[in-house]
Amino acid sequence: MQVTLWGTRGSIAAPGPETARYGGNTSCVGVVGPEGTMLVLDAGTGIRRLGANVPESVSRIDIFLTHLHMDHIQGLGFFAPLYREDLDVHVWGPGSATMRLAARLRRYLSPPLFPVSLSELPCRLTFHEVPASECDIGEFRVRSALVCHPGPTVGYRITQPDGAALAYLPDHEPALAALRFPSLPRAWTSGADLAADADLLIHDGQYSADEYACHCGWGHSSLDQALAFGGLAGVKRFVPFHHDPAHTDADIDRMTAEAIEAGRPEFPVTPWTEGTTLQL
Ligand SMILES: [Zn+2]
Ligand SMILES: [Zn+2]
Image 1: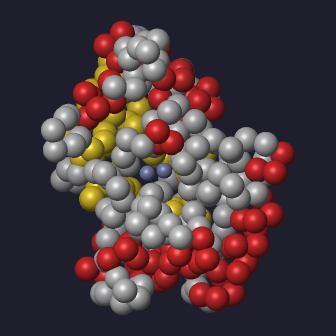
Image 2: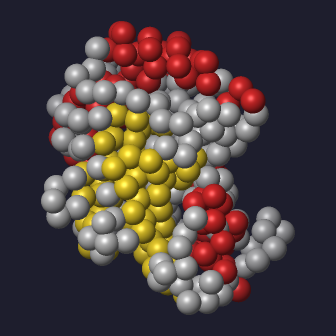
């Protein structure tokens, strides 16, 4: 599978010269299979550029939302393929205890917050609630599970028949459940089953260790916690994600180097820049 980062930022878009390298767009990752199946992970502002790169030949797109915080849905109305009449778009995401996914999304995609209502979009839209049992989409198998973050939030695991596995946990605070992290075994740690032995883990690394001390319970990880989580899960490669909007490119370089020095992970850690594509 081909994995492209279209938006790496968390919380709010943060464009500017000091964030140009890692990028200012919020969470969005594109996954394309060898047979052309196209999955989109989250619909942050990065989805606009992804949409501009969808070939006309694509007849179906599946968008997997981890949760409905604004930084993960804000780009949806600007995703050009939604305005194609010949396209099947499947949107997967969590409902709440009182509202289904479509009703929750409609609160944003309707006036006065957005001029076009969901029901007016020309494409053929289908909604699916998660977490759900494993589903097969083209050459992919997708699994979802609730993870530790404020409000209903899931992580995803995407596998191919040949075994390549991608785990996507952009907003995740597994350390919240442990006095010292990681002190619990894999089975008791939020998200660890999804990430187990993954070829690539894309994971929340919003804070430095010092910053986390002031943000415990906000739903995000420090980079050293994220690397410890990757070690517990036994991942083969790690990409820090959901960068804090206040962090400059130089900050992310420094934080990454410090976390690697402190944690000595047994896997490569690469903070990809926006637009990077990796073949898994
Ligand atoms: Zn977020
Ligand atoms: Zn969030």
